[in-house]
Length: 266
Ligand code: THG
Image (cartoon, rainbow, N blue to C red):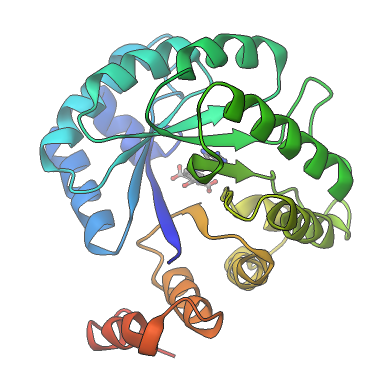
C-alpha cells in the first residue's frame, strides 16, 4: 500500500515557524494529530529554516511530537550532525531524510548509517547537481543502492527520491522522471520510490491539478510513497483511488473505507 509521508512539520512553512519560535506545543501537537487522522504513515520533521537554530528546534519538535505520535518519524535535514542527534532521540525506528551522492554529505552519512536499523531516503543528487536524463537518475540510484547495501541497509529499506524537476522549464521533465522510476523498479524491484511532487508544477498556474495528475502517473511507474500534505483531501483521494486501480487494494477495501469515512468524494 502507498505510504504517505506528512510534510507539514517544516519550519519553511510560516505558521509552523512561528509556532516553533514561540515554543507553541499545542499548535504542533494539533497539526500532527490531524496528519495522522488523515492517514499519514510517517510524519516528516524539518527544522532547517531558522538559521542557527536547527539543532535546538529539532530537539524541541521531537520532544513535543514523540509523546503523541502513533506513526514513525521522518527525520529531515541535510546536516548529518542533526540527523545523528535526532536518531538518538526517537523511540520508533525512523526514516532518515536524507543521504545523497554529494561528497561531503555522503562521506559523513555513510559511517552514521552503517549497521543502523532505519529506513533511508536516498536523493539522486551528486556534486554535478540535478540529474539531466533518465539514465543519469538510474546511474545515481544504482550507486546509492550499492553503497547502502554495502553498509548493511537492505534494498527494501531504501526510499529512492529521483528528484522531480519543474516541467515549466523543460517539457520533457515529466517523462524523464517517469522513465527513470520504471528503470529503477526494473533494476531493483524491492526499492521504494518517494519524493516531493510539487516541483513538477513550479512556475505554472493551477498547480494542484498538475500535482494530482502527476502522482497517479508516478504511481503507475512505480512510486509507492510521497512527501505530501495529508490534509490536502483531493490529492489523498487521488492516491487512494489510483492505489485501487493499480491492484494494491484487495477487494477495494481501503477505497470503500475512505468513502465511508468521507475522505473520498468525486
Ligand atoms: N524530497 C525529500 N525531502 C523533502 C523534499 C523532497 N523535504 C522537504 C520538501 N521536499 C517536502 N516538504 C515540504 C514541506 C512544506 C511545503 C513543501 C514541501 C510547503 N510549501 C509551501 C509553498 O511552497 O507554497 C510554503 C508556504 C507556507 O506555508 O509558508 O508547504 O522533495 N526527500
